[in-house]
Length: 130
Image (tube, rainbow, N blue to C red; front, side, top):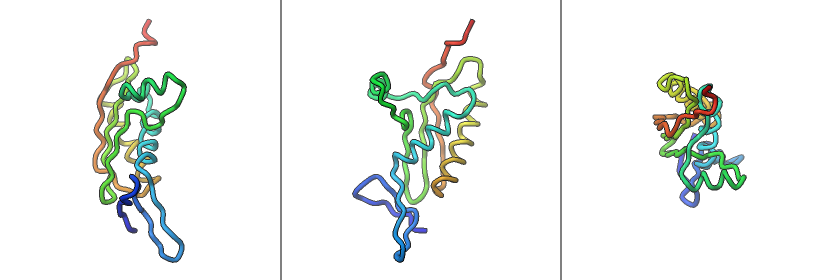
């Protein structure tokens, strides 16, 4: 499989067959996969983004890659996630599950290798405390 960066966009060629064509994956797609996988883990309340992402969310536009930064180089992906955790869950345990889930989702869906998944805890959701 060829894994070359397409310089005109933030997309990477993961398959190149001169008889059929090529398959490219945009960085944004990898970020969306990572964000969705992370929010499926029990204990994760939401993704945390910068102020621009927060404003976009309040206006009703959904940014599926909010709180996710990916770096794809030579077929290897590095991921940075910012999460809001639900109160009462162990942060190390939730983060370990998020790392496993995100790594598995990216590798299974794209065929790219994941080198590292760095997680920052931006907040704790206190809504369900009595």
